[in-house]
Amino acid sequence: MTDGRQKSVYAIAGAAAAAGLLALGLQTWYGSRKRGLFRQLRKQMLLDDAGLVLVRDDFCKQMVDGLAKDRPSSLLMIPSMVDIIPTGNERGEYLALDLGGTNFRCVYIKLGEGKGQIDDVKIEQCEIPEHHFTSPAQDLFAFMADRMVTFAKKLGFSRARDGERPVVGFCFSFPCEHISLNSGKLIRWTKKFANPGAVGNDPVQMLEEAFDKIDFPVDVDCMVNDTVGVLAAARYVDSSVMIGMILGTGTNACYVEKIDNVQKLQQTPRKRRRTMIINIEWGAFTSKTLPKLDFDRDLDASSTNPGAMQLEKLTSGMYLGEVTRRILLKFAEETGLFGGPVPTLQEEDALTTPDTSKIDHDSTFFGGPTADILRSELGLGHWQTFWDRQLVRDIVRLVAQRSSQLIAAGIAALLRQMERDGTFGPMERTVVAVDGGMFQHYRAFREELLSALERIMGVEAAHQIVLKHQQDGSSMGAVTMAGAAAPSQVGPD
Ligand code: ADP
Ligand code: MG
Image 1 (tube, rainbow, N blue to C red):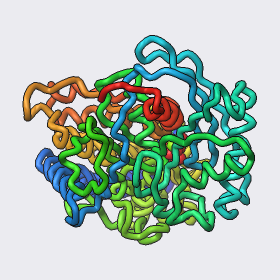
Image 2: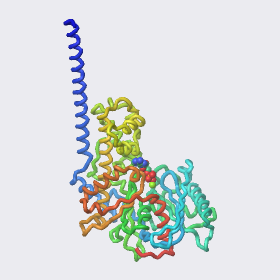
Image 3: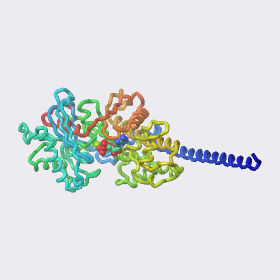
Image 4: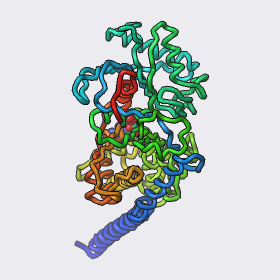
């Protein structure tokens, strides 16, 4: 080899080595910037032991304020007027109507002779035609009554069976001010519903009128929301159920409270009852103790209800995917993740909670399923590296961990309010009945929730808490409540 040729080979090799070192340096520099930001976020989003206690204590304080006559609180603490809880001793055949999301359901149940025994259940899901989300309320209720009568007739119910009207329970998952177990006023429609003529009126009365109009009179003997339904359904088979919780699109919880503690109660409940289910509406919990960051504030500002539902926006299925997307965008802007803030990453709701839970459940070494989701949902084909995928997985888990910590703090607060958290005596086994798609399908979240409970309550006390998935909780709750409320039932508290 000539001298000149040798020199140019050395020069090329030197340049290649320098470029390699530069790339490695850049990667490390970017990597450390990314990891640095991640460590910073982790510190700000997760609560240490003291932080958890602060959230729990503010939750407890606001629960007490919400139960008082006129003290401000972000927790509505709505007395459900459910002062009878299924005991498992109810008997008979009942119908229920469940209106909550995009479908409504007709339900039939036959309660058997043994305690907690269910002899037969039939559930029919009916799609609500699009125009009924905005039609006059009367038309929506007429539509539901009509479908229910068809369903009931198929089961052999007739207009005046045994001389008595069929008893119907109503699961109506919209905020209502209750006057009694089967009367109240709709405060506002939520979700997709906006039917004129309902707000301020009694949904039970509207439903009974709809049945009367088609000459099939029924007795609607209870109206409950989904959280209360979940508690009631679970209670029918297990008397240690004390809390009902929803973790789906939104989140909410209810619990069994001593009537003496419900100072704002205006109506006197039936004398022999000592407890009542309180619908906390906990999605609305607002507190300085909540770990909210700039991306949470941006999410709130661009939501349909800015300033409202703070806890829900940090915890529930409607939001976790979007929180994750906003954090990824922050990384893209500040650390060059994915080569910068590509347009797909800037689209609201480009990532859903089912997507992020799939990423969280990706147990492969190279993160193939994570790569698939980043590609299909965010169009991030060639910008992602192995290390980026690890970072995305860590971010997804961080968002789930924060949510689980806050939900655990809420459960711990409820248990303290019920004097069942182990500080008032030995901790008793307590069942929390939970329904909702996020709880049901997001296994890693459930595991985080259990470990957060251990941290806030101590391992021994936390092991006395059972989180039990209550399938079809809201519908089943409405029928078991209809059974408990029926005049023929005489079960004790
Ligand atoms: P709703 O709360 O409207 O009554 P569901 O209880 O069925 O309805 O919950 C649906 C919600 O659950 C979805 O909006 C979604 O956020 C969440 N979800 C559904 N599937 C999953 C999943 N695989 N992982 C995480 N969350 C999920
Ligand atoms: Mg639901």
